[in-house]
Every structure is written in C-alpha cells, then in structure tokens.
Amino acid sequence: MPVVPAFFAVLVIQPALARGPCGTLQLREERKHSADASGRPDSVGYVDSAIYPIRVHYRRAEDADRAATVVLPAAEMAWEVEVDQMGWLEPTVDADIGGDTDRFDYYLTNEETAGGGWTWGPYRDVYADDDYYSIAAFVALDDRYITDHDMPDFVAHEFNHALQYRIDGAEATSFVWESTAEAMEELVVPDSNLYVIDIADFNDLPFESLLFDGYSDEVTAYNDYSLYEYGGSIAGLYLEQAYGTNDGTTLLQLWLDLAQGGDRTSPDYIDALALAGGDAAPTYEDVYLGLAEWRMFVADDDDGAHYLEAADWPRAARVAREPDLALSGAEAGVSITPVDAPYDLGTSYFDVALDADMTLPLHVMVDGDDASQWGVVAAAWQDGAAARVVKARAEAGAPLEVDLDLTGATQVRIGVANLGAPNLAAGGRHPRRDFTLTLTRTSDVSGEDSGDTSAEDHPDSPAPETKAGCGCATGSDPLGAPLGAPLTGTSLLAVAALTMLRRRNTHPS
Image (cartoon, rainbow, N blue to C red; front, side, top):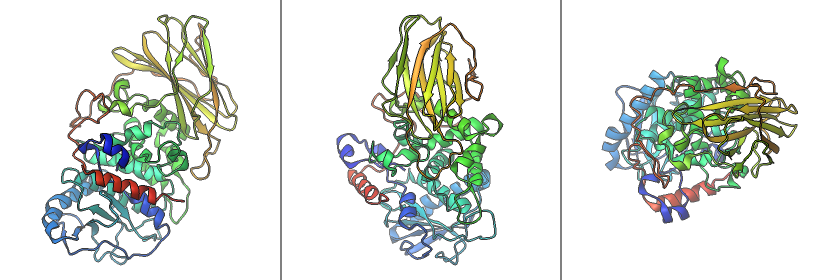
C-alpha cells in the first residue's frame, strides 16, 4: 500500500492519492524469528461470519456496525475469491497461539497501523510435517483512516499476506511478498485500480534489482520513500497475463514453487521464477527478459499487446530511460555506457531518435561485464499495430547482438538487462554491472542473435482481448494522476506525514 512523503504531500498531494501503508514487511523485520504469540490488538467485541471461519474484532464499540457491514463482507469476498476460486490454501489455524478460536482474525485497530494495515504471526511452523512453513497470521486494519470504499482493497491485500504465510512464512525476499499481494488486490477488486498509484516507483528505477525493496540501500539512495516493491505489482501481473489466465493461479503457483518444509531459504524467488514461464520461458532469465519487455509498454507507450490496462496508467508510470540517443545517416553509429548501470535483474533503457530513412535496420551490440549474463530487448513501435520486438540473451562473456527492422517505426527503445551471474541466487549481494551499448545502421539483417538463445521477433502480434469489467477509464491525466474508478484513499496530510515517519523509523539496519 502506498505511502506519500509528507513534504511532497503538502505541495501537490490530491486527497484521492493518500493511503496508509501495508506494515507487514516492517513487522516481519522488527519481530524477526519471534515466536511470541502475545501482542494482539485490543478488542471490545467482534462479529463472526456465517459463511467462512472469519472473526472481525473492533476496539471501539461504535465500530460494531462497520465491522459487520464493511469489513466482514470484504473479508468474505477475499476468502471466496482467493481461496474458493483461485485455490490458495486456507490460512493457518491459530487457536492455540494467540487466537481464541479456529477462526481467522481481523482487527479494526489503531495499533501500529499508521493509516493502513499489516499482517503478522508468531514465527512458528504450525504444520511441521508438511511441505510448507505455515505461520498462523492475523490482520490489523486502521479503524480511523481507511475509508469504507477502500476497505476491500486493504482486506484483499492483507488477506493474501496471510495466505503467503500459510505457504512459505519464512520466505526471505520481501519483493515477492508485496508485489504478489498488490497484484492480488487488483485481481480481487478489479474496479478500484488503487494499485496504479505505486507503479511509477517501480518503473522509475528499472535498473534496480528485482530482488530489492524500498528498504534496500540501493533503492533509498535514489528515493528514501520509494514504494518500489508495491509498484512491483506489475511484475506479478506480468506473470499472470503473459503465462497464465489473469486469475491469480499463476501467482499461487509461484508461491507453491517457493515453498519448503522447515525454515530454509531454498527454493528461493529465482528458483520459482525459473518455473513461472513454463515452456514459453523455461529459465528465470527468459522470464525476467519478458518483464523487461512488458514494462516498456505502459501509459502512452502501450501498444495493445502487453498489459491489459496499461493504456489507462498515468504517464508517470512510463519506464525511466537513459539520455536519448540519436542516429542520422546510413553510416552513423554511437557507443555509450549507462549513467545508471543495472544491478542483477535490472535493466537500463534508451530511446533512439532516428532520421526519416527507415530502410536500414538498427544493429544493436552489447558488450557487458564478463561476470554477468546479459540480455537485450529492442522494440520499434508502429502505427495501428503491435510493436516489433526482438529479444536475445547471452552467457557471461559471450557476444550479444541483434538487428531491429525499422520499417514503419514511430518510436524505438532499447533495454539492456543484467541477468546476473550463472547460478544466481536470491540471497547475498547483487552488484551493478557496467556495459557498452553500440548502435549502428546496417544492411546485413541476419534475424538471429549471437548469444545462446535465438532472437525472438514478434512482428505484428495481435492485441489481447480487453479484460471484461475492469472499470478502467480511457485517456490519461497529463499531471500523472492515476485513472480508473475514483480513488478515495485517506486524504489527511497528517496521515501521510505519520506514515512516512514510521516507515523511516523502522528502516532495518
């Protein structure tokens, strides 16, 4: 869930954009490996579901009706969609470790919620004999600043964290926790589009690793208030839409592939990504290179062949690029190194301005640090058709070259991806790797790359069907405000300041 810097909020924040944070990652860090089952929020009463094993507690007597008419229906919908329809495992039973029944508990509270919500459970594998590390969690929801309109989003997001705890409560990569929960929020409550708010923070730092989060020093060096992992919802939606049916089951499988019995770190996020693409993308490198392609095609850059709702995302969501490159003349060429070299599983992007002569293709050559594998994705936009895309990757130390047909091109972009060292693992350091990008015009079009994988060309691919009932708006706001149904999140600037203070005070050392 998004957090807005207080100094920025005072200047330009719109009431519809302020929302409290999800504090799940902060609490996991603060209470790391704590098996203490105490510390549940105070409650003066509760209401039970007649449909599912759900209990909603409240700390103020005047919230009894809201618990019954707002939170409980949202909790029942989240259970119906995520468990009954999508197939996620039911949350872990907590009756003997803090909960007083076998019901799953929600708390309307003001304890550590900072205007948002959080999900946590004592670090204990409740079902020690299965293939999962199952922590019994509960959800806290702010009873002051979450609006009734936004409550289903918060509930769907936090409930998914509880389901993640059921499968792999010991998972160490924070990015996959929040990118999944934020994507699931959109799949459960598709008409709200609140996930759109955070996309810019992810796409503004494309050179950062998919293994980082908003607390990583590498991210805070650029933005101390980044919502990087929340904007990573588009990584989750990419998996759903590129390799699944956009129904939550691909993300479920991702988490099942992360799971292991006991408190271990293997398999990790890299291992799960390697399985996410199936036959279409049989390695994690292929899956990541696909994401490096998809994140280029958002907002004004949407070509109708990638994200289902990307055309309605704000201009601020467009992927950040290095300084533009210009070529002119048949013999022209240019070589450049990036200002922001990519970390492992990060990408640097370049827009290329070409002259009117599109008869010669663009030859793209990448000479990268020999310690990493490298990938390249080159795209040429066309009027009235999907962009022409060529992708390739090469082993560490191997040459990497592709040719891009420029016939009819209206826009050209190149992405150079650091795919990490061979046998990359999610843990440990993920350094920056430098490269040199060389572009020339050539009449020798081979149609193949020089790496270990044939260049993948997608000329004139058809656009996917529009998702029914998405509730999207059409057009875009030139100031970068997200579109869709009215975003009626918390409007008080004091809440934005409070959430920022809490987020920075809980930055892990």
